Image (cartoon, rainbow, N blue to C red; front, side, top):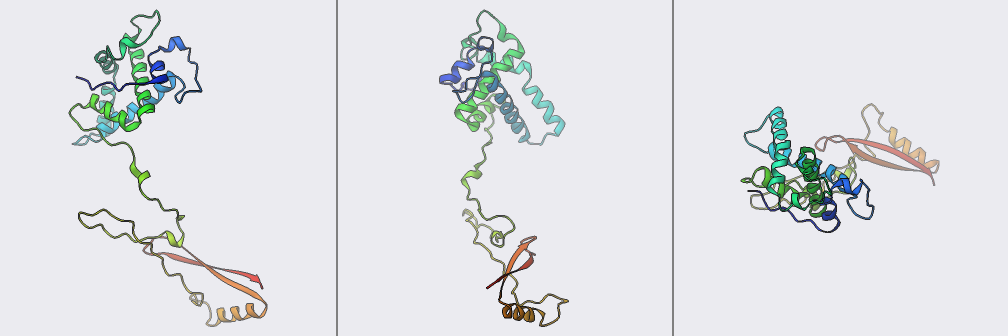
Length: 242
């Protein structure tokens, strides 16, 4: 028993249900997908990704070699033909093939048609909807994995990495509560009067006095790098005439 075939609409439906031999591979720039050849390439990649991720999540874990073998078995020519046969009325018999009767019995043609349909579902309904459908084909008893990254719903910092304001301290969330954005942490920059080791006492004071006498304005600019728990500070001296 296969899950219901996701319905297609508009130009996507027309292109998928028209055999590529009748379209000549012409790309229609007025559609978001172009033609069935492009849909098949997209569908192939999407199908491989979904099946690989389903097998990747299996427990006990599969080895890399086992994962590859199982993926090839899941997406074999026999599997493609079997899926098309199961969708005989909804998919296979609706394709216009001109005079080439029985062409969809060829494993290569069956794979192209199924990949095109997967690509069309992905373009029309999105990756997660495609995952929900394909996962029920591969593992009818399992739960569809969540492939869509929800990071777009999380607040992102606009502070460039390495700046003093980009460091933060994260407090562990309490049980039963969601983790709120941590308050910003601003490490205290070294003061301009701090004298590095090896510099004679009074050297910076003399430097500041000389700059003041000669009409120079001195600005000390501090920046940090290195790990958050052990930042290393670099102070640059910028001067200009006043």
